[in-house]
Image (cartoon, rainbow, N blue to C red; front, side, top):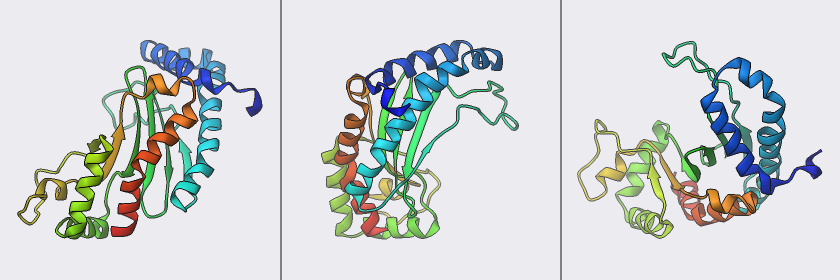
Length: 210
């Protein structure tokens, strides 16, 4: 039952399971440990996601659609035939493309917000906004956040010359707060909501300008 799940154990248990999965990435091991995955990773993550969802609605004014990504990999067209992801990924998405992200593995724990990939219309709106005073505002938001920005600029993207050409070449804009594992342990819900609150100015900028 959800009421019996201790979220203070979520991050350590999930990281331990993912570490073991990386060392035993085969279907036999996962099948033997499926009950552990359900109890130590999946159900706590689902509870965490359920608790965060209404808070993001309050924060943004829109109800996001939550998603916990499945551990199974699609290996049909990949040279890497390992059957399982060794990370946990979740997101909360809005119809306009904005989303909040969470990722945990044995090596990293990070929270992000923004748009991972602009469609054609939003790419044009992104570049147009960066050419005006809205670009100054975005640069201040990025600087104040202290966060890492992704994805990397596309070297083949043609943009007008100017001081923000590098920003214009980015095919999306997500700010990431890294190294959050120690803060996740006592309270993952509060930690992620603090991260998302810190990144909300970007979400508001993207929602207004794009």
